[in-house]
Image 1 (spheres, rainbow, N blue to C red):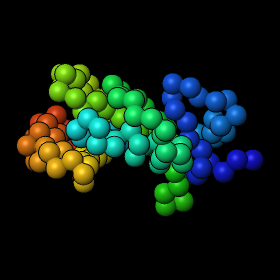
Image 2: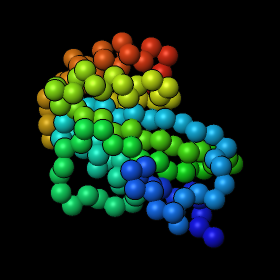
Image 3: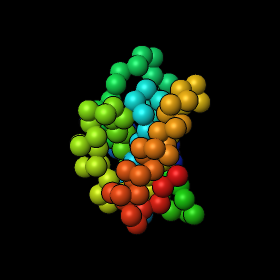
Image 4: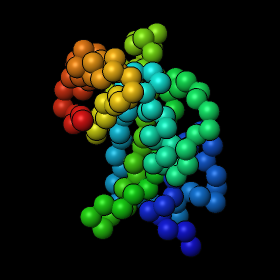
Length: 135
């Protein structure tokens, strides 16, 4: 029997043999935002699938789900990957409803992405996600 703590899948292509056999004790939603090309997708794929993507493919919206243990319970963690490009500024807020956590990311080798945390991402998240935790 597969350990549920290591079970993850992309919701667009759920392999039957990797689907958890029991319902999680709770569900949580985490949305990742930040400039395009700063590593949001890589971060989520490494976490959810334990592999590093070979090529860069810009993301519009992608979702991953993984089961993680927390305080003796199993948690279904929905990971929402968003598009950081400006042309998606009007669509991105559709990802925010019912989020439990918003993770704002930047790239250490792209200084503009760090400046945009304060100038763009924090104000956007504060506006659309008043009662949501963000980091």
